[in-house]
Amino acid sequence: NLQWERGSSLRDVVSQFTHFLTRYQSFWEVMDDFDTHLWVLEPERPSRDSSLRRFAIGNHCSLQLKIDPAVPRNLPEVHFLGADSVIIPLRDRLNSGLAQWDPQMLPRRNLEEILQQSFPSRQILEKDDFSVECAMCYTYRLDGAIPEIICDNH
Image 1 (cartoon, rainbow, N blue to C red):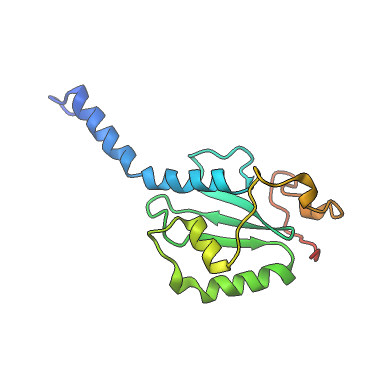
Image 2: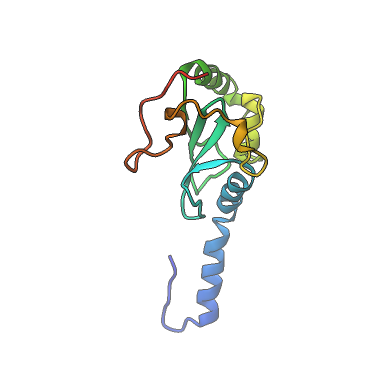
């Protein structure tokens, strides 16, 4: 908390504020890394004030992460979305590789190494890279919420 006491100068308050901001620098670096290197689906317009990211991982599946701003490089809360035939092997790989998580690395790199795959980026994908045969696979929002029904599209 910023404290303005009798006798405090504006320089003291600016110093406190600068110190406060440095506590979140690692969090912002993690979120910027997601936004730069991944196809972020949620939020539609990612910003630094959100600790949630949902991004495409391929095969009509996505991964939702909730990052703890206090310890952004620790293992985040992870939720896989997609066909069971695709996400169950990924979930198993993640669970068996949790001991390999390195808090010195960015979470994106940890996930890519543990899951043994690279994630698609919006910048390098063509629209033709994804099939449009299934409307469910492309329903990232339904009445403002993430759909709970998934298809078995492979």
